[in-house]
Image 1 (cartoon, rainbow, N blue to C red):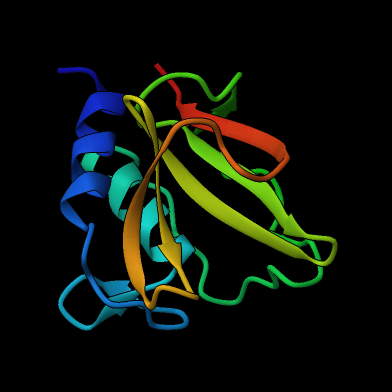
Image 2 (tube, rainbow, N blue to C red):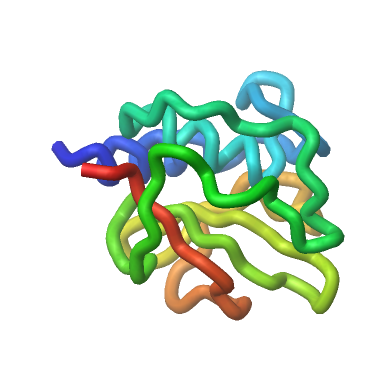
Length: 127
């Protein structure tokens, strides 16, 4: 199993966890950064998931160390999306769709098909 496949499986295992702003633990709730962090750690990434991000202003804290820019098409890739004009959002690519923390649904969900927002950047664990 590749690092990305491990990350995608870890993200998929979070489906159903409740949404919580700045949540980092599936037992107590996750936001989009929490879901991405779980996927990245499961894939072997040793970087730090920042808690002081400003997703509303478009600042994810710079380029994440240890990740490489990619096309976003492989399972486990992290997609930085523009959900609204002033709101960035992270999603994890899985086979056939994405996993993300959906604030409206108040849960982590799997969404089949194409990404519904413009993808600003995509990252994967350096190989």
